[in-house]
Length: 108
Image 1 (cartoon, rainbow, N blue to C red):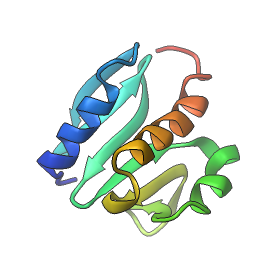
Image 2 (cartoon, one colour; image 1 turned 60 degrees about the horizontal axis):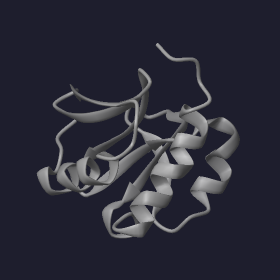
Image 3 (cartoon, one colour; image 1 turned 90 degrees about the horizontal axis):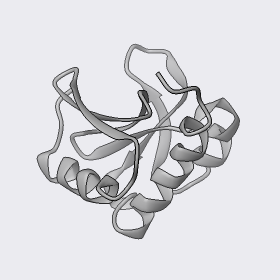
């Protein structure tokens, strides 16, 4: 998954003060883990957030969100968000939503 260095820098900055975050290079791009579980990532022009199946409908109702589909089948609980809809305070709100789900998972 190719990534956008500027979006990766914005994500790093937004996650810098949060505890339990580890950055991992995956699939040619970057993902961030919370307590060992995938939380979010970046691609060219968009962010990825793991919101879980329960929060997915609310996430998809937000501007710029769409189901995460890499293989022709949507991945339940994951969403893409176009970069313009997840910058500044909006990025923090997306991270908070993903953290609500991922933070409740058992640590790995």
